[in-house]
Amino acid sequence: DARTFRAPNGSSYDVLTQAALFTAGGSAINRVTPRAGTVPAGGTIDVTGVNFVPGARVRLKDTASTTTFISSTQLQVTPSTPYRVDGTKIRLDNGDGSQDVHYSYRKGTPVRTSTVPLIRDAEPMFPDAGPAGDYYSFAFSSGSTRTAIALQNPGTAATTVSIQTLSLSLSPAASTTVDLPPNGLVFLDAGELVPGASAAAILRLRVTQPVQMLQMIYNNGGFASPSLPQRIP
Image (cartoon, rainbow, N blue to C red):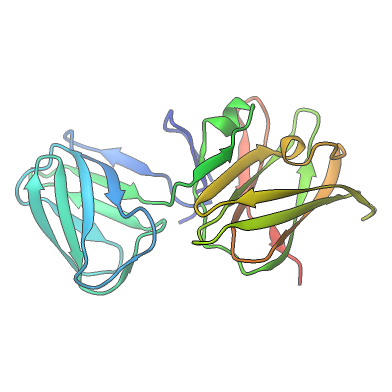
């Protein structure tokens, strides 16, 4: 299930699955709480939306659960085993026969905002954080094809990501650091992230604690192709 970026206008770009797939009959899931983390067996997942009716059932991927109808805008779901919410599919089978599908994801608090509309208006949907270490990304920072980098701190302690650009011959060039508070998010064009980066370079990202990362090749015509930075052994 791999989709990555969801824009407020509803468009999605491929690496974690899109936030909403379809709605029939007017019922819809708008939000799942918590958005991320693991809910213990017997815990509660709150589902809010519209046009829920008695008999509505929320189905969790690969996990048995019970659903309690609270109101036309709220359901409560209790998993029978620990259930990880991040990026997993939640399906609504409403009591009137209508359905909806929702993918929950952690939404960080932006630390900096891009000036590029496509980046500014999109929401990165991250996979799990990788371990501490060095990662690399191929960066285009000029011309019609460019690279954006998204970094998010899922931890409870602040962290700093060190970023260095290398030329295609692997010579060091510009460098910078990005401070991420807990739940902090940075999603920027490579040129915004590392001022002075060459037109085509390699970005080396060094993290000292697990950080969620994505890269996106895009152009201003609306094309976007996300992928994951690669870990350096």
